[in-house]
Length: 365
Image 1 (tube, helix red, strand yellow):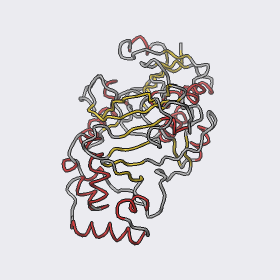
Image 2: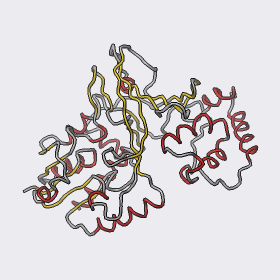
Image 3: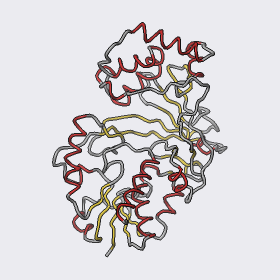
Image 4: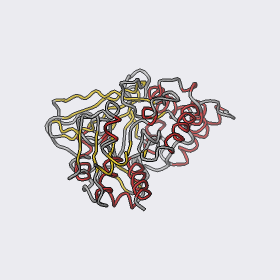
């Protein structure tokens, strides 16, 4: 008999299993995939750690979280500095003095501020009625039409004028020559890939792969005193109040017989005509010098029953449905819910770790 059955071998489940085991508890971790690690799993291809389920760049300002992950891996000094490609024109991201020079030839913060302010004034948008108007009222037409509109519409599969204004509360605009995408104090990629961390977290813990929890739910829960569930909360309750909505992604991985394809780890394609949102070149995350390279094109798509849910659509309708499931979850005395799918919330990696450690603290106080 196990103390805990942990459904999902991603970061949340792996951290809970590690911390519970440290406290003398006996855990069984199951996952429907053929590998551990969840979406941070890396597959070694041509000597390159390929982020199989999309780019994962660790960043945090939380010193406690940073010190926690550094127990399990050494991090390199990778800084995320993505590039935007708009119909062959190349711009630095996030929006900063380099971007403004590329757009308008402005060289000082005052020149750039004046250019943006004049465009906003010309538009004369008083009360933004949708995402398009909200973005235009924040950054003006040049930045919006070249670097926001197409990317956003591909990501959501809806016209920007049909998306609510609240999706964009603010847009980061930097009047410095600074291409560092994140403002966080700590940033990097684990040397050897994220598998190094997960393998250390699960060392000595019973793990069963290719196990579908819902096919044998009644038998599996009998194996332990408590269940830690990291899957979709609506699926756990058999979609009693309907399905929660997500956006999904399709990944097209390709091995290329060249040393360097695009010169950067992340290039966003911000026009509407290009069907994918970005190309990832994985070797640049770890400064690789392998003779070949691996790229991944990311295609956003609707999330059907057989697709992997990535981004919760946290609009008013879905959040209302989630609250109903949350009430049901509170009555499940022997089940702990946590993680991106169970909490119906998009988490950066540091926030997942923080959430897992809070659940652990609450469980073992």
